[in-house]
Image (cartoon, rainbow over all chains, first blue to last red; front, side):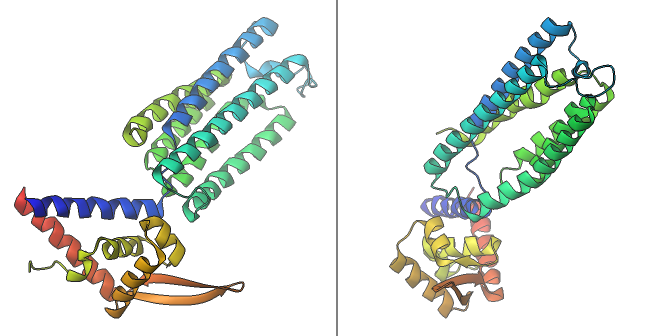
Length: 214
Length: 96
């Protein structure tokens, strides 16, 4: 019986080492929850502002009659600020919580695997970001929700090779939401809240209890 | 001696080194040290034991002016590791 316990320990040690040497496993589930809560707060705030200005929740109201961007009017500025605030707080929380997790797990945050993770995440993400900016330049706001969700989903799937496999499922969820939102154009805010808010909270909570507790 | 279990892998550190090398192409000394949380001397002695058995291959190169030594599992080493793992699993099944 003593031997069996020893063997079981060896096996789990082997598995742990293989995982730790090929994947960045210090992602924090809590940071997903923070990002999700921030996204929901941001979306509600944006919804209220839009209601107040136009009694309308479609992003298309930012277009004027000539179809071009109606300047950086106050509403656009406010929405932009909300988006930036959500992004900054989410990123900061993500970085801090991941640093803490890496310290706990004794994993190097600037190792080979975290670099591969970051590279594979950023390439589709930056491509999508630039593409969305071009859409804004053309005044096609209506496509922003599907595009951001789809590109974010693709980025997650591409990064998931270098971390928990669960990240892939989050990516698939984002892509499905993005495609559905392309059918229901004009409901972008709702889909954003679901994709960046609800999905992140669900995923983050699951991850926290699966990997980060103790 | 139970069949399949390899005496060389009785050491946790040697087993650890092989585990890492099974799933990575080339791993340098410092990365191994960090992953296994062992001292330089300790790691070096276990590496040389594995090397003597031709379970690993060694590559030395210069990064700038610093020498860097990397290791990979040899064909022989991979076979031995797989056999050892299968034996471990078999033993556990028999015991359950």
